[in-house]
Amino acid sequence: MRDTMGIIYSGETDASLKELTRSRSTAAVPFGGRYRIIDFILSGMVNSGIRNVGVITQNNYHSLMDHLESGSYWDLDRKKDGLFILPPYVSKGNTGWYKGSADALHNCIAYIRRSTQRYAVLAGGSMVCNITYDDVLNFHKEKNADITVIYKDMPQMDPKDLSRHTLIETDSSDRICDMVTKPSLPRST
Image (cartoon, rainbow, N blue to C red; front, top):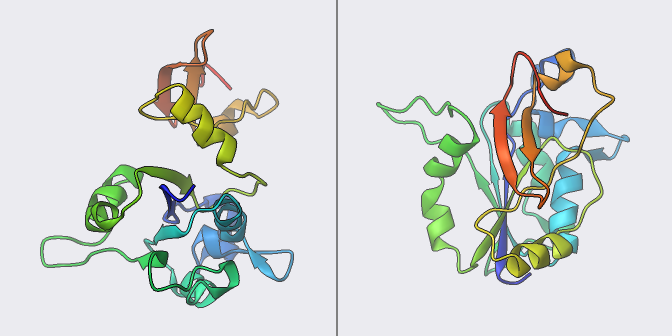
């Protein structure tokens, strides 16, 4: 995984968390007293051997920066690579408000191009899961894929809740054949 960098987009907000995200990003919401939600994704990357991680921030990110500090808790305080906080770029013509994760990535293109890694793992900062990326990257290389997506089928989820997410449909060979962002009438789970 030395040839892989991690990018965590912590700009998403969850209206259902109300008071918890009034003054902090979803990624900085406490979990279990000691941890923050971002710790799950960050630990998964580090446990996979990823040593170059950029965290894209958007709003209310002071609490997140205080928690991440220099990255020493994850052994990411290093001279080469390490942990990079990527705040929004604000200028006369740019408000610093991203139009989504693709726009956020575009605004961090200098960081991405400066990287010496060949692959990138892109993840949201508000996922609570226990995952390592070794098998995913091996699958990606084996299939010679341009993009590999990790997803979870959620058949028990209420359609109203599904309409807050990006949904995909796959064919019999596990290739994505359709993708819809925040559909009003979800066709898949």
